[in-house]
Each structure stands twice: as C-alpha cells, then as structure tokens.
Length: 148
Image 1 (cartoon, rainbow, N blue to C red):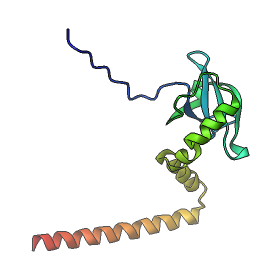
Image 2 (image 1 turned 180 degrees about the vertical axis):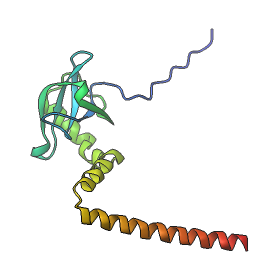
Image 3 (image 1 turned 60 degrees about the vertical axis):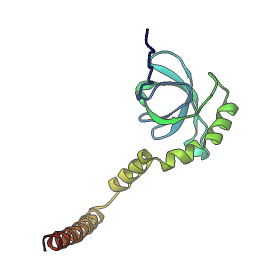
Image 4 (image 1 turned 90 degrees about the vertical axis):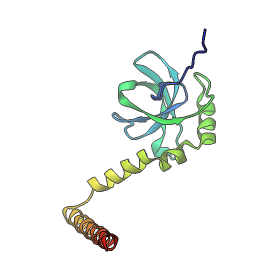
C-alpha cells in the first residue's frame, strides 16, 4: 500500500487556546480565549486583557456569539485556571498580535469612518478625488512616454 498524506484543514478550528472575538452581547468587540469546549454550541471563555475595560470574566459563551481569530495560544491545557491563562496570554502577546492584525485595523478604520460628520465625509471624498486625479495623470504620462 502507498503512504497516506494527511493535510490539516485550513479552516479555523474551535480548539482550546483559540482566541475569539465577541461579536454581540455584553462583551462585544472584546477578545477572550477558549479555556474548555463544553459541547458543540458552547465554550468556556476567559479574557485576561491588559486593560481593565477589556477584561472578559470566565463564563460559558455560545459559539454563535463569537468569531474565531487566527491567533492561537499554543499548548494551553484544557480547563486551565485564570492565572495560567493570563500568563500564557502575556507570553503569546495576544493583545499586540491582535492590534497588528489586518482584521483589527479594518475594524478600527470602519469605526472611525462611521463616526465622521457630513463635512468630514465631504473632505475625505475631495481628498480621494485629488489622489485619483494625480494617479491618473501619472499613468497617462507613463503611457504617453511608452508609446513615443
């Protein structure tokens, strides 16, 4: 018989140590880590953030309220205590990894855009039109010099 090549799935897995983002509820837009899997719909989460306003207390949460992030704390034991999770969180630098991720930057940008006034949106539109004009002018000059 031949050798079997087993390749791991590229999907984000619900696993102990996976960092999750609350999408709804009391802890919306906060990060936590899966400490234990209760069943196919619920997990035990704990979120020891560095800032007190971003802390998520240890509790059971529905997977439908969570978004799985690509960040995983490796070798976190099942049902680890709060102190062990906090130490692993700081060692893995989860807050820093999240702040540097494209997902966090896009969320921050969209929040900032939603808070703009009408006049500020107008100014953004004008700046984008000016930038587009400069790019098109440069491209036209490059095309003209390539034809000549």
